[in-house]
Image (cartoon, rainbow, N blue to C red; front, side):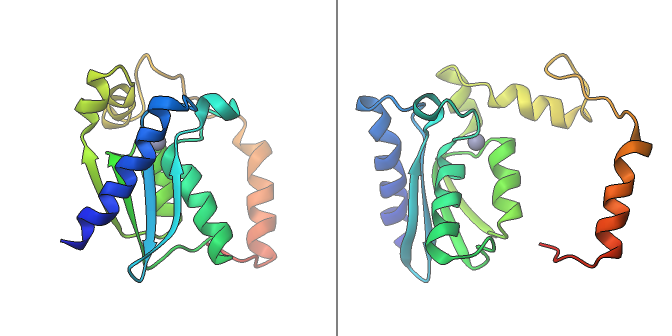
Length: 155
Ligand SMILES: [Zn+2]
């Protein structure tokens, strides 16, 4: 299976943090037409960036490498089931195929909090993990209306 070659590379990217300690043991490879476009490993600690998950790092690198925000036609390989943030980022990038190794339960078993986020989403955005309140829509809607009226590019 050709996928094993790329999953080995994702696992190797994750293993970087066993010695470098840029963040958690998470790595990602983005592939287009059978060739690696970008790799990334978790850099949350090194960059003081809570969004610097391996997938996000790789998505940013792939966008820069290909010169587009649209990564349609790419496949993404990650050593662990993407967290909700990364799943959404992957969908924003128009990537349709993701291969992952470890499960969210595997990540929870080593102390990561993905399970609490999936729980929050499954319970319709209610729970102790985050307070989410709609407020002052009248103040925020006019920019949306002006944007639509001006016919900007959608993505
Ligand atoms: Zn993530």
